[in-house]
Structures are given as structure tokens and as C-alpha cells.
Length: 294
Length: 229
Image (cartoon, rainbow over the protein chains, first blue to last red):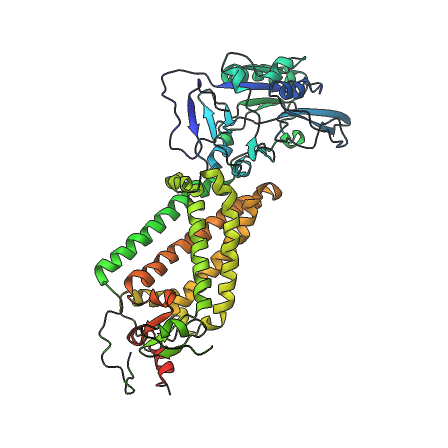
């Protein structure tokens, strides 16, 4: 759903967004501290409730995880991973959801004008009115987030509660979190909060702690504190996420060059006709049995 | 073929062309029998429909084409089905023409300099049979493209059933084969419908004039006229 009160910074398959630049809107971000998450799943419930998403059947995957992966009707999933680290057991929990990349691969790959928008505050949203359900966004996403809904024939994912944020409320998941491992605010503030927490963790002996804000996608609208940031894959995060090179090459080079090649062929054919005229406009001469030359 | 009463205005060429090709009828030569023409236009029309429903998804420059069929989401639904028709018609065409498209060593030169020579009207046509090297190259190009478009198209049709890397590859393959096909199609249409008068008739009524055959396909002409030793 498009929130008309928000200016659009970028829009899929469009040259420009609608941002006039008149308003100075801070980029917002969600802060997730995996080290203080207790896996209560209050955020999962709050997300389903606020977004009116009906409950889905849970699937046993061998852990406390609700289901194996995100779904068109389930945008916020706590992933449970058990790891043995230095003889002890680490129970790693991460809130999996749309990362709201500063340079979103979904938006880059999307062929439908205005189907994926990035609002001036950085929130990346699927505009259901324009989505054609082709699934290209899932191909372009470095975090495997957008999901196809067979019910609507369109794609769906976390909206970062843009409807709440646009009227000054925090996202539903943040509101529900009982431990304070989730916060919401300007990107600047959230990165600051993250650095503080990372320092704390380092003092506590987690020497490899760091804030996950991958620059390969221009940074994300969801910054995550990882106690073991040297192994983001333990949390189901990729080490250096970026928009698939093939998608980038397709949009930036192959498509425009292909367009030019076809246009050049048309111009070339026209030019050929102007210069050479008809081919085979020769007088064939008499046609008879003595004919040998063409 | 049953005998028909010849009346004034009877189009014998078109009548013979229903079932036969490579035969001389009066001053005309039957070049493409009806079945070949039906297959050709099935490919042509289905590809055109693919174009109208595919270009707006390719780039918004062609968004207006999507509006012609009811919008982009309609394109997304019907394009794959029309694509299947195109693939089926292309398969029929491959079967129908395969035997006539064997390339000689000499004709392989058409991939490069010979094509330019031909476009500059500098080529020696003397040894050209029913199809010249360029037409054969175009035949293989279009059939390979159809195969590439089909394979990648199936992946794009059901994106969530395939791994991400394969989907990226499918997008690229669909584009490369389309561009390759589109560029060669421009010349196919130009040469057949514009630059070589009398050619289009071979795909509509099925016939060409003797003069046309002698200019463009002299070896084929000589064979049909019994002039080839």
C-alpha cells in the first residue's frame, strides 16, 4: 500500500521518485540486538496482528523456530540456531525480515513501474497496486526476503510498518519487544546505539562483536548487533551481501545495450534502403534455356 | 489433388500451392506450400504477441504496449502462455524446414563477411539454391533463440521454484536470446517485406515470379527449369 503522505526517494522501473526534496526526512532504522533477544516471538505475533495477517500453521523444523522461512503471510521470523562455540552452547536468535537496504536489489530488479518504492525515510515497500507478481524482486534480493502470495498473485514482505511510522509511531514489533533488544529511530541514532552495545559486548569477552550494517547494499535500514560478527552465516546472514551481479549487469548494461542494438538494426535497415534501394531490382533479361548466369 | 474446373480468374498458382512447392506454374514458381506458410505465420503472430506482452515488462519505454492488452499484470499472466505457442510453432517450423537448411562449407561464410557482401550487392548469387546462407543462418538463429527463450522463460514463469542463481541466469539468457532474435528479425522483415520486392508474396500466396527466382536463387531456378546439368 502506498502511503501518499510520504515522499518517494526511488521507484522501481522509473527514472525518478517523487521526492521534491522540500522536506528533510531522516532515514529511519530498526535496531536488533541478537545478544539480548530471548526468542519470545512477541514481535512475530505483533507483526501478524498489526498487519492483519492470519495465523499460519507452524512447522516443526527441529528447533523453536515457527517455520522454516519467511512467507507472503509471515514477514517477521525469529531464526533459532544452535552453535557450539569454545566448548559451550550458543543459542543464536535473529529476527529475520526485510533489511530495507539503502540500495535495494528488489527495487533494482523490479520491472513494474512504482511496484517497489523507497520512501524518503528509507523504508522499502511493495506497492500492491502496481505489483505484477513476477518475482523478479526475489531474484534481486540479497537476503531472500520477498515472497509470492498465491492468494493475491503479488509479492509481500515487511513494510517496516510504514503506516505506523508515517504517523509517528514505532513499528509493531518494536512496540511488543519485552527485553529492549529492538529499538527504532533515525539510522544515525540506531548506529550509535549499536556501537555502544558492541563496546559493551567486547568488554564482556565477545571480542568479535560488531554491528551488521553491510555496505555492499549501501547499508541497511535494519542494523543488527552480532556477538559473533566474524561468523554472520551462523545467524543466516551473508558475509558480504550485494545485489546479484547478473541483475545489475542486466539492468545497467544488457538492457540498454540490447535496446540500442535493436534500434541500430532498424536504423541500419532504413539506411540500407536509402543507400542501396531495392535488392534484386535488376532487369533479369530474357529467360530462356540458354540462360546460365544469374 | 482433385481436378478443378478452370474458370476465368482462377488462381492456379495459389491452388497448386495448397499442397505443392518447388514447382513451376505458368510464369510463377511455388516457393512455400500452404502448410509452410501457416507454420511461418503461427511463429510470426505468436512472436508478435510475445513482443507486445513482453516489451513492457522489459522496459517501461514500452509501457503503452502493456496498456493495449489490459496492463502489465495481464502481460505477466498471458506472456508465458503465448510463449508456449511460439515455442510450439517454432518446433513445427524446425521440423518442416530442417531438411532444406543443411549448410555447405561455403555457406558458413555467411555468418561473417559474406553477409556484408550480400548487403552491398557485391555477392555472386550464382550458386544460391532455394535458400541462401544468410537465410539458413537466420533459420538456426531463430530456432536457437526460441529454445533459449523457452528454457529461460519456464524458469521466469515459476520464479519461486528455482534457485536464485538460476533465476538470474534465466533473466540474462531470456534477454540475450531476445536481443539476438530481435536484431536478426529486423533484417528478416526488412529484406523480405521491403528491400526485395516480390519476396513477401512467397509467404502470402506462396508464389514468386520466375524473374525473382532467377535473380535471388539462380541455382534453385535452374533446377526447377531443368537447366542444371
